Amino acid sequence: MSRRELVVLGSASQTPTRHRNHNGYLLRFDADGVLFDPGEGTQRQMTYAGVSAGRLTRLCVTHFHGDHSLGLAGVLQRLSLDGVTHPVRCHYPASGQVFFDRLRYSTAYHEVAELVLSPVERDGLLDGPLSAYALDHRIDCFGYRYAEPDGFRMLPEALETAGVRGPDVRRLQEDGELTVDGRTVRLSEVSVPRRGQVVAFVMDTRLCDGAFACARDADLLVAESTFRAEDADLARHYGHMTAADAGRLAAGAGVRKLVLTHFSQRYPYEEADRFGEEAAKEFDGEIHVARDLDVIPLPPRR
Image (cartoon, rainbow, N blue to C red; front, side):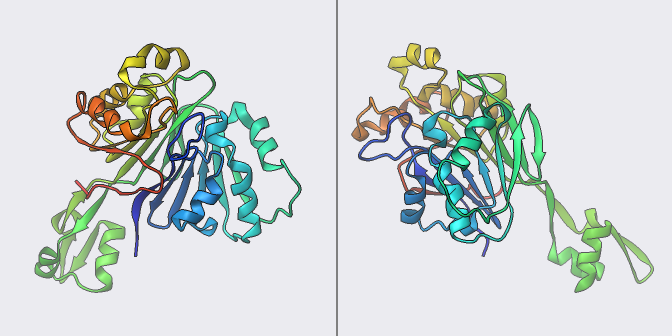
């Protein structure tokens, strides 16, 4: 059975705390398992969450600050230890190639997993459903957008009326039209458009055009909200967003559901709901304040 959900493996920013691990997020999207920003301790969090290395198909690193990448070494070695047989695509800023290489070969191990390296140099489509967008941080940083292609939903009653049954349904889907009893049946006559689902992942950045482009019309936006409004000056100085900024991003981009994460250790864990309250002043959609090991389903299709 296909699953479409976000698993929060960690929700802290620079420093892990007793309650929050370093960053780490797994997007389950049907057969794809996309691991974003594996910080320190991600491999152990995967165990707690019941996430197998064998389910990973992509690794995406937004930038090479430690809280977003120190867990990469363990995850890459785990792919070989578990004998993962399918290729795993790795996306990361091209300017950080030296850091990727150091983490990949930080210790001795028997490497058998096949990694397909796909460093990101600029905005644009990477491959398949994944695109990258340059953000505004202190070092090169990219947001990632996972977009299912638009499709269509077949209408059983219309198919029956048109006399399209069995294998002919697939032929009609592939060819766009089909001749039945001397009459041409077009796909548009027996189906309705179905928008593809979109997940956007925007980590360390100030508000910028790239963040809005990445998040445009997303069903689910995972956004850093390192600071609260009282520390907005610190956020701008260090290249981060506040919870209110994340709310502005979600509202301006037409997002359906916002997940706030990447919280500074300066704020008590017990006050986490205040991040949601600040974002809600800017965004009237659904807001989820992330906690480690949360499992967040994608919203139903539009």
